[in-house]
Length: 73
Image 1 (cartoon, rainbow, N blue to C red):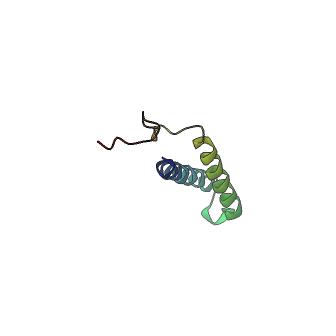
Image 2 (cartoon, one colour):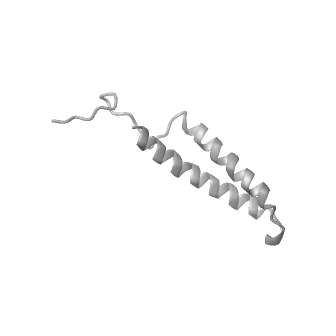
Image 3 (cartoon, one colour):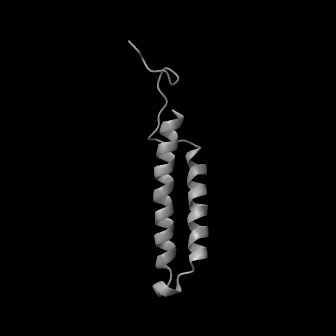
């Protein structure tokens, strides 16, 4: 269960980080004026917030009816 959650949360965090980076880079008028320290901080914060939000639950990861035990029959 933890492995599934970690994989799903990491995929979600990577997507969120990419979206944050694109938004922050797009806010610069000229590409050469991009403040990469600000972009890095924005991406890091978005990634942390995504993981924290995922702690509340991920629809992609549902616990089995048998409390995580698979039926071996």
